[in-house]
Length: 461
Image 1 (spheres, rainbow, N blue to C red):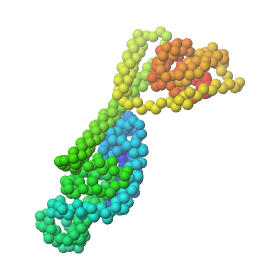
Image 2 (cartoon, helix red, strand yellow; image 1 turned 180 degrees about the horizontal axis):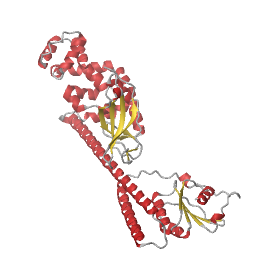
Image 3 (cartoon, rainbow, N blue to C red; image 1 turned 90 degrees about the vertical axis):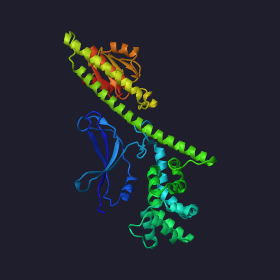
Image 4 (cartoon, one colour; image 1 turned 45 degrees about the vertical axis):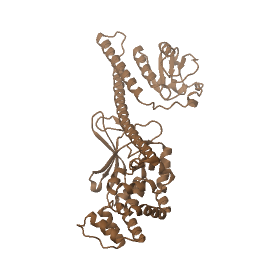
């Protein structure tokens, strides 16, 4: 097989313009087999962040991971999986828009288990094969029915036994195996050769959390798949995934053991159902967030239009009508955003109390800085609490957590508004903008917390 060049893309369907947006996040070294690709995939992490649609500019979180064959400059999709589905878990701490999520600690434990999986199997391999054959002996004839023609051919070739004709039926293969392998030594050799692919290339190679139980049962038979699911040597870190997979293969039995297995099955099916529900809700949550983002952008655009309106003392009737329309639109958008935001888990982390409670330093203003332009002015700084300052000019402070009576009073008294963007609440910022437009007062948005620099910035305009 010639070497293939493969690339990983994160993709989403833009909710604004319906365009499929794709961004390449990794390109692999050329590989000859999917086993080589799988090995590289297992050692690669892909950061998941929102990215913009090139057509409309809207930013969205990716929904799908896709692998493309880009050999010879051509681009062909090999496979794709939804992010946060049971088959493609997302690693995240805290709130996440995806359904099936691992914490960083769970992911670290999982990766430790995967790293030890092959070594763990090799350490117990001989004992495993002996026990696996002991399981097969009492039901030898029945289990021979589960082998496919491909498994018979591979086993015969591995043992140097003449292969039957291509037209031979499965029944013919089974009868030949019954007659040919009669001693325990012969049966052991055949059993191991016939099961080699199922054990080494399926159960040992495929990560336990992605074992395709339904497909394996259909391909290899329920008896063998059930035994291997129960007894394949696994590191301790991966044992919980074995329990999940058992629910897909166990049959109902009578007695106490039957009750236990049925309970395991119920729990496994319930877990699978919860994962699917979680994935569905995550998609709905992502849609809500994108809709909220669109509404926020409309709100910002409406506010920019409002700010662009000339501020005049003697307003014409048309100006007053437009401002009423803009304010009505702003109120409608704000109400809709509050409704949607209530449906979304709070993503904001609390402000570092140590930083927020630090005393705001008010340095002595050097003589060369001329603040005479502020004489007689009252400057309202919103975002941090502090004591009032009177030094030819007046500085009053508000913590900026919410719009309260104190802030409304300060806004009427002040000549100049300053908002500290790193500390004040988002809703307070928009309110202050509206007040500045309504009262015809200047408003400044700064990241600084140093009073001297704030006042210099106000003077510079």
